Image (cartoon, rainbow, N blue to C red):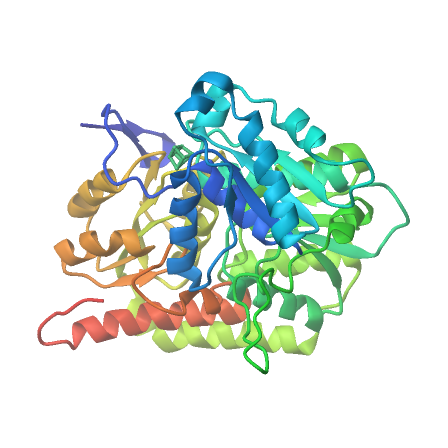
Length: 454
Ligand code: SF4
């Protein structure tokens, strides 16, 4: 069923050769596009497709972030398959405008509207009246290509390419987040604040998907927060761009090509080495010095690694999820002296295998690389290579149960625990939190007489 390809250094890349996918830990493009649009201030995502194409993302958002999400849909039905979806999309744009009066509407296409071949750009343009202040961003997100990460990347690139304009230098750094949690964004903002560096987050769900209830019980329909349209326009004038998730980096490439904004595509800042690299990049771009507080945070992470080394050394860990997070966590586990046996991602990315192979070479590990595959394949390889701990989203629960090992949840979606989105696994502080979660999961499992796992 599987093909194990020998590569130099005896590292194996496992490829799925089945013609069926079983339990894929990935979602369709509109899911990612909606998350990108939700990080923009006053922007309402509009799915040009059938009802279910918006219900399914909203369901996942509600379960993960415990927030209700305003996601509009053009409600295509059988007649649209014959006559096209222009009428529905035009009505949908008018309805969203009259009911919510947003600053912008972010459109994402679906399997159906892409197959029909609707000219979404033209329909959107025609739906606006002359002088209309509301902006419309039409992203092409066909769901039979790529995954939720492709959708995020396409929507963000659409936003940047539509809005970015050359102006005066702004002395800021663009931070492309990708699909990470509000807690992660807050931690990165905190690091930048300590370094006294100004930034533009592309995009920013730290408030829009973790919305406070204000005094008097007030919670606005369109949440506060998110990156303003003017800040996105100003991203062309920044000192440079750093991407937390390189899978969302095409907007950065576009800014580099069109406006000469430098782009440093480095791994996600999880663990010591990757966070060091992130901090060094900030210093290089901005000229900032590393403040004492950041040095202390790094020192606390090193101390945490020492504290738990005797629990974690040699522990087998299997990791699945989105490629940027998985490859960074694999490196962090190796830094902690653990033995990452399997690294799996459903979304292919050119940096994934090289990242893992670099860790294998540096730490003399033998992590199996599974790319573009599913949780069935992951489970098969876990059975043969072993795991005392699994890291991944909630979809890994059944595998953890079958193997009788704990599951530490990260990534998206996490629907069988609350609050995961509030905490960070990034930067020095976030890495300490992740390390503590892993250690406590192993300790809790070890001393649980019934071996009840989490
Ligand atoms: S895969 Fe296609 S049909 Fe299914 S929810 Fe996504 S866009 Fe809609």
